Length: 389
Image 1 (cartoon, rainbow, N blue to C red):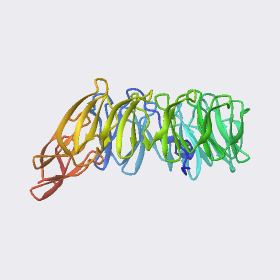
Image 2: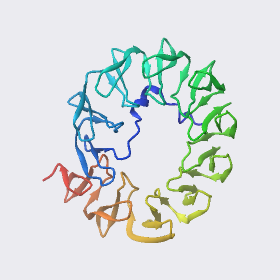
Image 3: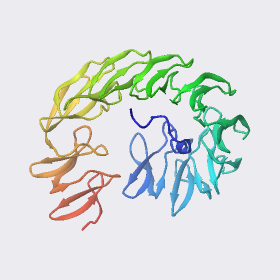
Image 4: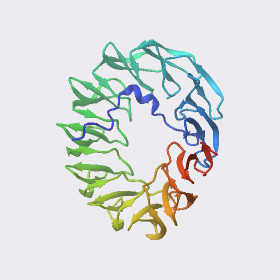
């Protein structure tokens, strides 16, 4: 059995797992600095000047520059200057802050709205925030009132009206009034998503509904979160998929499987990779050494040592004359052609021409290359950014 449980995250880290708004700038790293891009066009909106930065949440992003912390808006303007030892991202109008070991909350103007009284806190979800006080967990409302007493051994944030809490060494679920809805009988429990939650009972994984009724009996060694309406099932060394009703759609017979993405998943038997649809039907099979994830209906595949572009809708191939040097890194792959190295993107297009004597993977938007015995660093446009002549 895996030693980790996908939803059992220490809740003091939850603040950094923010919800990105639909058109909010997206975080990117450029060498050693962070900035933000337009999520649609990819154009730079906020130049990379920050030593540390986090995704936007509710039109605010937490950034660090010259060892000082700020909340900025989507245009890069400083909205709140921060002086705290630790800060979370905004959630439901509040950001958790910590000073001298105690936690509280500020609003978007930087005003302290909930005093720094707690040993740990989580972000606000569904009108409540988890707090840790005197060795126990409870919940506060936006007014700072402890509406569900700190009596639990552990607690997760509310999701779909229920919160997983630990009592007597076992997890169960309470409602917004603090009343038990699903008795504490699980070794581990996750948040609900579309009326389903993954649980662990007797060291085996299963799935329950809002009433605690098993949808998938706890008989598996691991179960993933739902993706495209399906969960990955692991039993022993084999993998398969089940739907929301618990029906096994893809038999537990593969040596490895990825989550579904755009209605397709990668699977492997032995050393050969395939792509299946949500009904378990193979749309790509037959001796492939590697496949990338499907993106915009296409994916890069490897067969006989060469890259090819596969269209899942037409099931057509465009075989490229590029030998495989290494797999993709940050949506770019190093390829070798006519004695020189270059880079292709996830569409199989040459984005940096074949002109280098050697080339390494992209890391944080930069890659090291060799030319005429000299090493230097380029960006994703092929422009030298470090150790240039």
